[in-house]
Length: 365
Image 1 (cartoon, rainbow, N blue to C red):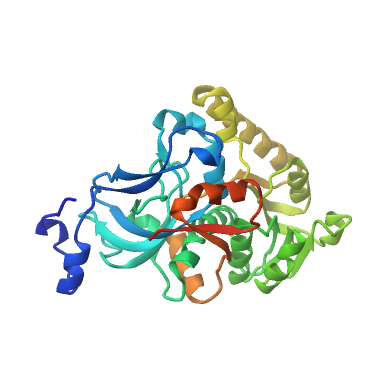
Image 2 (image 1 turned 135 degrees about the horizontal axis):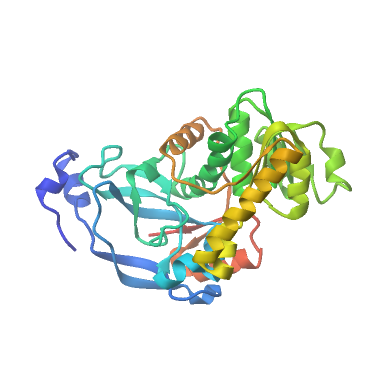
């Protein structure tokens, strides 16, 4: 363990006890490593995994809880191998909630000892499945006192994905009509809550188990795609924006047809990673760009709408709004089950087998 010099902490002025306890900067910690792509059995909880030195705008977070996202299980199985294979072993995980243990010399937004939550961008190599996670200061924000670390860790990655679609891309505004295809998942539920908070009228599709929760979140209509004979007949009117979290050909067709002219269709299932994995980065990325451009031009001329692939990106404005909505009780993602980080294999296996319908969180002692 390396003890920083006083120069590293000139702007930190907690009590003497807190200062002594928190100013230490660890050089290694426990972390879950993925040495190769495949099943949950490959995940390895190891001790003495190096903690890289902090850059000027980095924040070292002592993790207390990290959530298991669909991206984590897909990456473990090989999604994104065109980017990550040469970097193995990697650490999975995007969400985190915990305490600030150390900060870079130019960090101004958070302080040592502060309770924070946040999320890494999708291409981060050193993820959050570790005792200590490193994020930029724009990837974390103070954790609302009303949320536990477990509750907070379930929110940021999914909510920032929804934020990027609805606020950054579609730029939704009060009075608009929004359709969320697949509102039962974390991104869909976040999108419903964002749109309702913005004063929009929201319709969503979901499974039977999610209907009541989505109506309670403020959706005007939650169409049960299991019980309804014809989902499209059950949905009335046109929409200013459609967020499709499913991304199948039939949901894309349905979403496009429900849009008003000038509306935005956004899908989470872009093809950049899959085409790059199949053909390599040199061929795959240009191919993905061509596919996207073709669809954008097609739908712009045939339907008069904008078509986008949407991904999570770190966004301090979005994270700040998420925090404010959480504090107001308007943003929450339920956690269905927690596992200690030592049982990360069991957590991933449960998600792979669809034994748990909602969010899973790893607790870190």
